[in-house]
Length: 298
Image 1: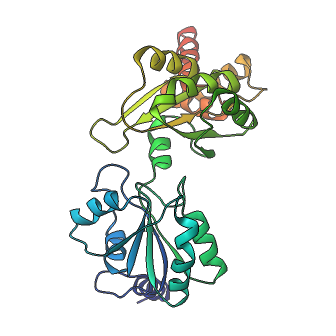
Image 2 (image 1 turned 90 degrees about the horizontal axis):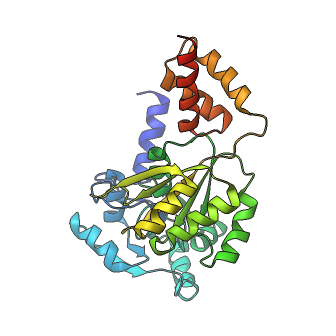
Image 3 (image 1 turned 30 degrees about the vertical axis):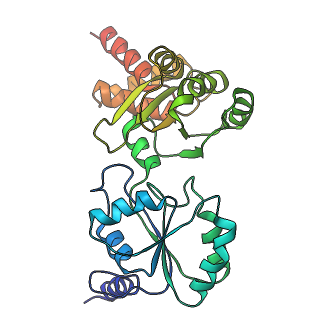
């Protein structure tokens, strides 16, 4: 066995594996965002091996635990009781308890109340261990069809129009794609605010991720805003992904020059994707220009 293999095996034992005892600490366990099969084997080992599980909604987490036959103490931990129950949890952790923290869905600490607990556990020199898994942010980025090399997760916006548009203003010149959470009842208004503040960028509304009716509707922000204003808010939960701002120096001439160079050794679709990512233009617009250039060369 190599030295690296020994180190990996040692970490697996310390952090728990099938048949292995967990070490003390706070375990931040990612749970499915929809499909219950999207749970890792390591997450199941941890959830079955800790002293107790902290959950936003114990009813939601109980369904997950029941689905896998896990019997473990559940304690509610959320925004409304965090200040009251956190001191006791931290005292247990300092005494060597093994505690798992889960959100209702996805990765803990991403738009949920776990940050203060994790921060104070770290300050107390308690081991804090991430058990990675499902994330609505990453799932949406993967299917949005927008640049993924650089992105900013902005979380939930303010609910009212004025504060929401003021809140969006600093994101106008942030490079890379932007990812937002939003309630479905406010989706049309949010898309309209995004188009007004950020400009009519390409975007995707990703709905019911990993569930039976998963959908990604793609288009410019104005088109998406019009669609949902006319059709009404969809059902389920949504993640909005907005493409990056177009670089100021990428005018139509520069895009065409880059496309001509790319088309020398790439197919039209590949060339359009390459230039769109470099320029910040939408793939649809660049693809249309690429087709036009290809036609001119015939």
